[in-house]
Structure formats: structure tokens, C-alpha cells
Length: 185
Image (tube, rainbow, N blue to C red; front, top):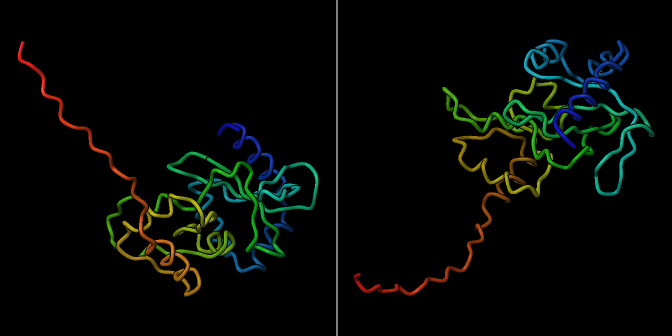
């Protein structure tokens, strides 16, 4: 699925947002200012009927209403995630390519303050995308977080990340070729 197709799906999902959906986000603790701030830099959320599969991929069209959010990487939409407001700790991918929300926080910044890490897309949204939310804890890209100076997270998320980052990196067995001496011409 191309970025253009994801963008088309996201625009369609965003067009389905009604006042009742915004009110529900407010009830869940997402400030209106957070929605506005995030909306100034990327699409915020949409609504779609989704049918989750066992593979944690969802298909749009059938199923209950889900909140849909874009997964951006360097300004490009690489995936969409869908989750229910009744269970924001469980999400599904559209393509499976998005490993985290807020990956731009891995870029060098003028301040070296801690990067905030959130447990769910709902928490990330409630904080206007000011940090990251890991979506795929098995993604190799998580190791990039080791280059950050500091990370702020709740204890459960922090311990999970430290457990992953503290595992030794697998290195390949190196086989060296013997030097071949060539005769001068």
C-alpha cells in the first residue's frame, strides 16, 4: 500500500469525525488544545469501521468504529493505526510498517531534555504528540532510542524499553579473506 493510498484513507476517516467523536476524546482526557497543536503539523485522527485480523492488521469497511491515526516518519505517512476508545491499549496496523508515533523525536534537537515516551496512542495524542509511543515492541528500530540522551516514561514502559535496549546486539561471525599477493606487471 502506497503512502498516497494511506493518505486517501486518512482523509476519508478524518471526514467522518463528528462533534460526538471530539466530545469522546475530550472525555478521555485529550485537551482540545492538544488536538489543535498536533493538527497544525499532521492529520490528527479519523473514524473508520475496521475489522481487525489475527495478524494485528485491520481491514477498513466492516466492523465497529475505530479511531484511526496516521503513523508519520520524516513527514511521510507510513502506516495507519486503528484502536477503540474502550481499549486504547490495543491497536491494529493498516500495513504493519509503522513502529512508533513521533519518530521525529529521534532527530537531533536544540535541547537535550528527555524525550517523553507514552504507553498508548491515546496518551500520545493527549500530549499533542510531544514525544513518542512505541507501537511495535519487536521492531529493530527501537535500538535507535539508545542514542537519546534521556527518556521520560512511566515505570512499566521504561522498564520494558530498558530490557530491550540492554540486550546485547547480535554480531555476525566475521570471516577474513587471506591477502592475495599480486605480481607486479
